[in-house]
Amino acid sequence: MLMVCGTSFADVTAGSEYLGDDDPLTVDVEDSFDYAYEPPGALTFDGDIRGGYFTIDTDQRDGTQDSRDEFAARLRYGVNLAVTEGLRFKSRFAVTCDDDNCDPDIDISRRPSAGSTTEGGDVVVDELYLDIFDRDRFDLIIGRMQTRAVTRGGVFISSLTRLTSTNVSINWTDGVALRYQTASNWDSKLIVQYNDSDGSSTLARPPLDFNADDSRISYFYSLENLEPWGPFTQRAVDVSYMPDALLTNGASADTRDDYWNIATRLAAQWPRQPTGASLIVSGELGWAPETPSESAVNTGTSGDSGGVAWHAEASWMNFLPGHSVGVNYGRADAGWLISPVYRANDETLVLRYHWRPVPRAQVELNVRWREDLDKLIDADRRREQFDWRLRLTWRFERQG
Image (tube, rainbow, N blue to C red; front, side):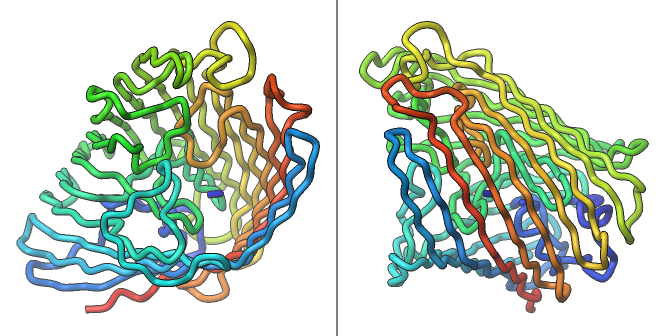
């Protein structure tokens, strides 16, 4: 699987012929804080479409094997209204379609399944919010939004903590978010998120559970700087806090604890230039001090599961004009429960190639291998998967 006010990621990683609001790279990078400023009264429309062929081969934990493949696509289109100089409104609908589910069904109340994605064919609203802002200083967003905390690693947009709507999935964050940017270009974000009793609208793996009243609200804080500092193009840290959300000993015991973790990320580029070939190296390291017991995640019978996760990647950008390639490796212990990119108790190796045939389009070939870190106690073997995808992303030109 798989994306700013101030300097954008595209400004330092791609040739100038691909820059701007129509750059398809921003589909996975930007969140609801990021927008093109419009004067009061302006009404604009924008969106994107993404689709491709996906295949996966699995050696299951019981020793059996299976293979599956599908064509899948996602369409998102929205409207932006600049109400006043410091107030704007955004609404966007989204729908996915695949081989099995493609009959349109307008279901505004539909929630993502366990925070992963909505059902194919369901037409949902994935953004609906008011943004009170002072340009390049602060934003206060209230409503349904897209939220991201990503490592900006060339062809890889990875995250250990927060990345809504990866690949062709659809999910979101319901709540309130505050962004504040200092004069030294440190971007501070606080997100107060509502969690439904049926589950979070962002990915949260079992044994995280939101049935308890005190677990309805969770918190996320990040601090990030994208101003170049020597070779570094990104420095960031974030903290996630989910009170009373961890079923420490599994669902049957109903013993609850707070779940929280901290993650840090860095990215660097050589040479640091807006055009031409360059190497981008990046990585992220996270730690969760309070984790579920090994019995709760089925990796053992005593003690607590591990709470460390990390990944590293290197991308050779524009080795030919419009062509980029990269490699990514990541590991997440069984107690790391909120990454939308790296599964708990998993190690991952990814090779990825990007081609920009025209400014608003991006073709991606992604090859991935994944395997369980620890064999589950009731399994015959560790699960192993190999998958690949060929995907096209098209960013529509802004209208209005």
